[in-house]
Image (cartoon, rainbow, N blue to C red; front, side):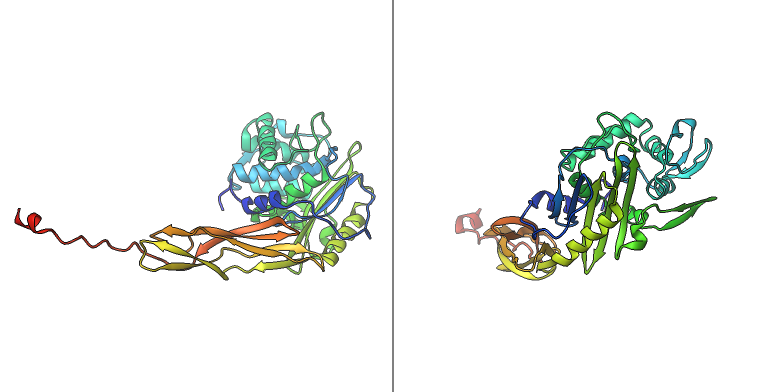
Length: 363
């Protein structure tokens, strides 16, 4: 996918997903707010003050990485300046150092370098203020209505906040990008003479963990966004102001995987309908799901699948052409959908000219 469109499918799925009923109780946290969602659908599996706007500390850097990967080539070279120096956690950059944007992103996401965040902003947008504008523009496009950024590193500032649910949804979107996913799942890396070890202990402690980002300031408390994959399902968890975040995340992720399963309502390639072809060389063409239609369910839940197809389409038709959509419903609410695509071609029928009338032949 192109830089500006990766994650579009997961974003659409997240916007489709509602806060449907969750299995009862049996889990809690020490956090001021928390959210647990399934990545591809955005279904909320657990929430606790999930929309409450709070300081978020360095989990801010998830958005910093998203904006960088969407607006610049990861191989872009950058010369560190004195303007990149910052207080707090550091990659220990020095003015004159030359690094690629990708190397800065490792310093940003593994050791939470506040200096790396400023360097990324300068590398991508030239000015920190312009980069922050891109962060807020992206938040708006993703529908993160409880989020606003004032800087790229997460240091406490007026007008800098988010919610647990917004951060979980942002991480779900970010994980669609394979460069982001690779960086945040890296346990350690050596860049030049720098050895960077990931601060995220869940990479070692939690089964299937693939990231994402830690954070802390005195005012924000401990903040954490994590993700794990088990049995083909990816869950994303976010907690804000949580003094026991490692254990809370492991408990929430275990709860999600124990109580939900990914149901494939229609596998990719399965023919589900057909459509008439006007002026085509064939009467109709079969239509199949373009990708797996999947949604997380509890043990007793069932999906209803509905195909939406026009009565007919005009020739020509090419394989892979989107013609309709197949939708999944849970308790009467649409929760997921994918395109229906043509699996066979149809050329346009050649028009045979009518025979000339006798007076037309005469003249």
